[in-house]
Length: 512
Image (cartoon, rainbow, N blue to C red; front, side, top):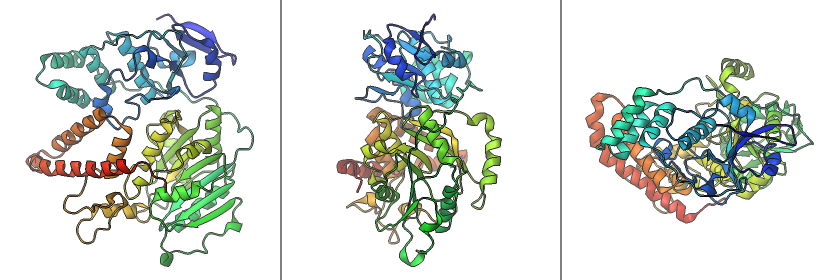
């Protein structure tokens, strides 16, 4: 493939194919993207739907987003795309093993997004030609893609989903299996050189806490020692009145405005929303109460967001061996993963333990969806909601934290009640007017709510098939018959989870 060159006003070389509107590249090259295309108008939107067989609801970018002029999309049109020359050279270009150049481009897009730290973007109007193209992906290319990028189990699962009785599927599977194997040691796109912080952006930091006042106080002291200090910190403390020490937080001891909110409502989503209403910073940092952070933590969030002209980022969350470890232990753990750590790309999750978002985007969402209180998935929902605004969450390796994860305390105390059955069970918020009785819904109804809120029926169907297949075939062989006998009850649990998810869907997004 012979690509043309364009030199931006900033001096960077962009390679491209097709009829490019070059003037737009000067602005795009200053942003977080590395690869650009306008494939939605050219017949590529939601092409290669088989990606759902592998990713289902666990891959945020399985289905292209609607009603956005710019968004993350790996569905690159090989005949009309642009890419930074440095990115093309580092990642090595398209893989010629595929029969179709369209599959070569899809493989390049998926790998750059999921594994290599490059960011492919759809940009409306970047190319002059919007002629519709026909997308033809052969069965052999499908299986080659799955075998090259994932464990063999995923290719076998595709045989099952496409029809295990079909000779053509097995023929394509064995053809690809004989010739290809899963890639290892992929080339990573290195982070850009970080700029110094421009201006004096203000930062608000939010800490929801419950039964962990000692850990929260420890975090406040870490914040006091930041090289770039937050202007205000909100502690939203849900520790019951008879078990808390209200004199513990002394505002005059800290070099920032400390606001303590004694939470009367229930749930971490409500806790964050109560603080968001009072935040005045240009950026909001979300953190758990049980983390330790080094002095460059906040500065590194700001540097990456300004360097990449981005709106949100996840920091690097490192799990401690035990709850008494400290910053020296974090340093040692970071040294152990140094070679694999340095990747800035689009995150495929959102971390309430370590994230930074421009306040203007938090305000557009109003806050967290309180339908998740008492359950799981609120962080993923927030990240997906940002994506649907056209705001990717960058995976940011520079701001690091040590996640202590003590054995007690935290908002999961409320959510853990969902596992209890019988008279001792406390009703969860997601149960609404229909308390759980004999069948405990599994997976969590709030996760199922997320699947219905953000994903397509096809993606949910693939999740269901994989969920039950995994339950049936994984585990000791000796208990296989037991799992077969349990399948009807597992279906009851799954359907009960859908029942509650649909009730939450009828309520719609709530922030209060």
